Image 1 (cartoon, one colour):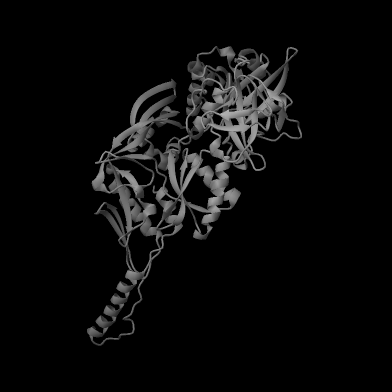
Image 2 (cartoon, rainbow, N blue to C red; image 1 turned 30 degrees about the horizontal axis):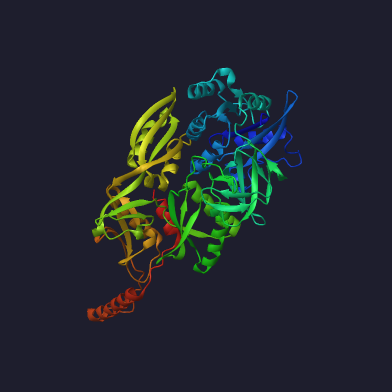
Length: 595
């Protein structure tokens, strides 16, 4: 155990942690030159293209230091706010963390939130300043920020570059000398923490774990505490670039277990593994069910592809247990699924993966969050979809989820960002200057306002400089109403939304105007209306395409023309009764981007 070091890497998106991990793997000889490629630990093409880590990975390295052999376990973490629960479990499996800060950008929001997680778990923090090879690096300013943030000495900060390999020796030295060896009792009953799982089409679900106490042997009967299921450990081993089977894993080791599990729901990140015949006294603390934050309807563009979409969803869920879905139908879009996502990035990634891996083009409805609806009979409903709302007369009040949002930005943009957050019904609670020109703003705001287009607007206001992070706090009572969109008096359920009373009028008006541009003209007038209950708050009309039936009448009596016009009018009326208004796909997408 003295020669094991378990550590993770904490960084904001795009601060170079995957590149630095590549250098560590190269330096310790874990990856041969033939196998080396950029971002070794990122498997998906999507991760490489966007430069983000979506799925956390783990890899074991061997390193010789002062004549002794050490085993280093790197547990990689996703950087984005949507995956913060996975990050918290990865951090719980470590004793140390590399805090990587980009020398050209300084400290950003997710660096701070993940750093607090690491400090809560008593990890040893090793500060690293990356991208020192760039001409626009600002080492002295960024060093000041790091010292102010974690209170270390200036000489503790390692100057490094993932591209050139500068400072990698110092990082490895600090991991061995500063990060404590894992503590635990080798003789105690088995207690291991699951921090990730992957799906293999031949072997089923493979769970990654770290042993806190005891040991596990091949062939042991094990039990997952929170799900209560029992399995046979067919194969256990350590995670190199490929999986390497072992006969036994001891306290402090990080490894994998294959036990023929077929469904992703049976393996939960944060669960505890123990032996059936000698169970541990208690589960490891900190386990939570992963809760989706954002809900949206996903429908196939062609209604015949519904079964294929179901198959694609099942396959995706095996790889990503945090995706939830259930069937639903819509009058406008046919059959589809109501899906729950961890956040907006997660939703975007699922859409992209459906397109790439399964060649499914889908329509996604407006994202919603979960509301608690209290009725006058003291019942409570969770509502994910505006169409699931009880009638207005039965509702007592509605509560919506609130978040605490942290925005870190240059001080030039404070005014515009405050205006944006106040427009989104935010309340500013704190403002802290991290340095002379960087400021951290804290707001309380409704989650429903953030899922729409908040992030895009924030980036454009701040010219890409602001970084954003949020934590869900509680539910708060709010004056929310259901806004319906009617076409010729019929509701289009896919365009309904739950919205705050103050914003309803302007939002309804903008949707009506937008739909007027996007819906093609028919042979009859189409009325587009926005309504709250029975009250119409906005209307626009698409005029009919009409033929000039009086063109053949030269002069003569007016009654001849009147007769032809009356005949046409009757035809239009009959057509309106049987005619259907087709809403094109781009109209659903346009609602998301109203501005």
